[in-house]
Image 1 (spheres, rainbow, N blue to C red):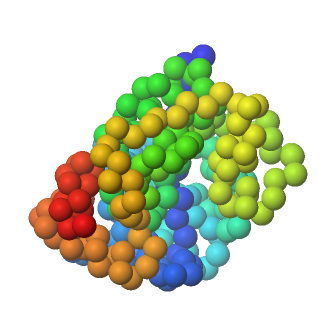
Image 2 (cartoon, helix red, strand yellow; image 1 turned 60 degrees about the vertical axis):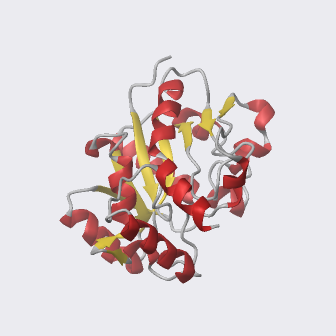
Image 3 (tube, rainbow, N blue to C red; image 1 turned 45 degrees about the vertical axis):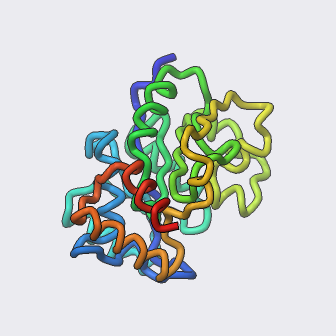
Length: 231
């Protein structure tokens, strides 16, 4: 079954514990959330991209950015991200989606394009590159069918499963059709960190983008090559 209603959900919230409001922090005048969005647009048209955040007041500023830039958004449960995903898909009529976290400014869109081609043919419940992990932190990419999520929706998902929405399927992988992309990158790259968890990470990302003329869609391989020279 060929999947025709595939979209992308970028998950974002403003109350990060280690670096508060990191999705709103700007690099060369551009909020982090828009940097991630610019990379996702390399794969999906804007009408197929949704920023999914919480209903909590602290995410009002994030929603304001979405409205200003005419970006689709969805507001749901803060803690139950699993349910937020399902409700978001229903609202935007997705039968499946690519999951992207908003703290990944160097999202590997070149790889995601290849993964998308495999996933849309409909043979797999999940297409991923983190089962097992072989890519640096911050380059995770996951596609999943809504039907697959709905089938386990009423099971006893624990708190972690509801927050990290695809973990349940990895733990119970024998029950699902999962295709994993293994890294062909230099193994030395695997210990690199391309996500933003703290202020130090943010400053590093700022420096990298500055070295690349603040080109938010600079290739991931270019970034990896630069980081390897620094290490």
